Amino acid sequence: MKKDEVTKRAKHIKHIRLEREKAIFMKLGSKIKAYFFTGILVTAPVAMTFYLAYKLITWIDVSVNRLIPPEFRPDNYLPYSIPGLGVVLLILALILIGMFAAGFLGRFFLRLGEWIVYKVPFISSVYSLLKQVFQTFLSNRNDAFTKVVLLEYPRKGLWILGFVSSDTQGEVKDKLGRELLNVFIPTTPNPTSGFLIFVPKEDTISIDMSVEDGIKFVISGGLVTPEMAKKKK
Image (cartoon, rainbow, N blue to C red):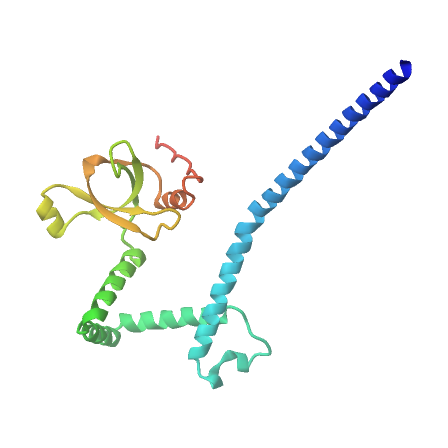
């Protein structure tokens, strides 16, 4: 009888020990798993950023190198290729083109080229659209996509984040006969695509969120919440 009790107690102690060891290994495994995902969270954005930057620089270097005559390519005069040299040459070329376009002779050729382009049916529409887009994003205008608003869309009770580009003007305003805002509604996770809607000013709620924070908020799908702007005293 005593032997059975000793055996039973020994089994019970062994079971407790196994459970403790199992709990220790599970806790250790969960910590290792957490460390692993933390490492991914820390290194992945940095690694992907450097990888994309490297690919972009390499692509620019190769593209610029193809435009340069073989006898003038820097690689022929240097003992080794320099990454990013094509980017530097491209920046210098764009600066020189800008300087030339700002002069009298450059403006003349620019107008002549645009006049020729506008005479081509399909090409003129594409060129006009691209020119307006680049002028919007590269100009020094302070009213271009600087305001973030909330509005109820696509129905009452559902709210969406929008970027105000400007007040509605032209034929749209004349036809509707009221004060409206041009609001760009981006898509998640790609904010470069979306659609334009015309919204009455009274139906929007202005918020202190900057455009940059709003774009981050859209890209992350709401996971990255911008901090509230400090109230002015």
